[in-house]
Structure formats: structure tokens, C-alpha cells
Image: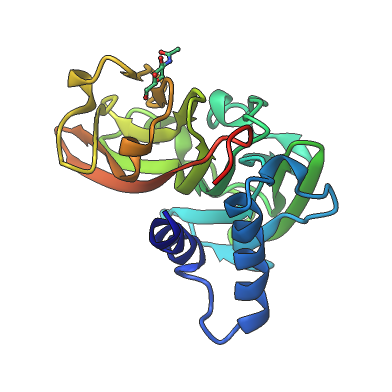
Length: 257
Ligand SMILES: *[C@@H]1O[C@H](CO)[C@@H](O)[C@H](O)[C@H]1NC(C)=O
């Protein structure tokens, strides 16, 4: 159990600057709270930790695609919402702005990417990370050197190989809970999604698992044997993309060692 916990902790901190000892200690502190079965008592002041954020300023050249990525760790599992000049980016992906409540016992490292394929006028883009009652935001000003030439209508229907835009890199929740692991994909035509468990088997064969049309993998009654890496592969005729989510089932707080 403890060893498995260290694996989860390592997966959580993987990617953060290894020289940043303080940050690592902070993350491991979060983990220790889970291990001592007190995840629901994590104090509310515990902040949302950004592990990736877009640059404060960047230039969008016509004909190119700009990618803005926010990645954050928080408990409960955070969701990420994108805004353009403080207005929700609805036309881009309605689902990404839905507020979904996560289980209060969950913890996740989430990654969310906004793709800007049309060069619009200079604007401020903001990712808002929501975790329970906590929020944190990071903004990026995207400059257009051409004053906003819109070449876009055509590009909506253009062939697009799949990209996974929203997923959890690591997800922790207590055994017995029902969990949803996102795999939000962009692509044209609409990509086909397959989730596989840590044996490489299609999850379709497990009656506790269900893949929703949105790409989410829903697992009911999380069990210890679910621990490991789940992969989501999105495929269309132009290519495929894959992400992995490390799933860590923690002990329920009503049992003790
Ligand atoms: C959940 O799984 C456990 C075993 O892993 C089983 O004992 C329990 O009955 C299951 N609960 C439900 C609601 O299916």
C-alpha cells in the first residue's frame, strides 16, 4: 500500500521542476494527508497548484495554431474553464465550460488545452481552475500581428487529426466511489475513443466501466485492483492521439489500518 502510494506521489510530482524542493514537499504533504485517511479534512486554505500555465504574452501568426495549456493539482479534482476577454469560450467547446462537481474525496492533476486556430484580434485568454469552493486563474495576452484576419469558417470543416484537450494525468479517489475520467477530444471527423486498462484491455469488457459520448470513462465502485495507468486513444482517418491517466484508489476514511 505504501509503495503504491509512493508511485502515485511520484506520478503527481513528475514533470514539476526537480530542483523545486519546496513544491515537491507541498505535494507530498497533500499525499500524506490522503494516506492518513484524512483527505476530506484537507484544510480549505490548501491552494490550487499550477504545474503548467501559458506564457503571459504570445504572438499568434495567421495560419498557425496557438495552444494554451493550464495544468493544475488540487483536491477535490479541479475543472478548467477558458475565457476570452472574460467571456466564456463557448463556441470552442461547450462542454469545457460546464461546471461539474467532483467527489469531495478526489484529488487530481488536470491538463486542459485551448487551441486557437483562427487569428483574432489581440485578446486576453484566461484559464479558471475550480476545485470545490477554491478558484485560481492565469491569463495570457495573445497578440495578433495582422490585426485579426479571420480565415476561419473554412477551417471548422477542415480535416483535423485528433487532439486530446482535457484529461487527468493523475487521479486519486477513495475505493467504492464512482469516478469519471475525462478524455475530451478535438478532431474532424469526430474521433473514435477507446479506453484501455493497465493490462491493455478495452474497458468495454468490464461491467463496472462505461465510456460516455463525451469521451469520459466512468468507473463505478472504484476498487483497489483498478490501480494503474488507463489510456484513452482517439482515432479518426487522419491519425490518432493517446493520453494516460494514473488512477490511484485510496482507502475509504471509515476504515483504518
Ligand atoms: C463494490 O465492490 C466490492 C468489492 O470490491 C463489493 O463487495 C461491493 O458489494 C460492491 N458494491 C456495489 C454497490 O456494487
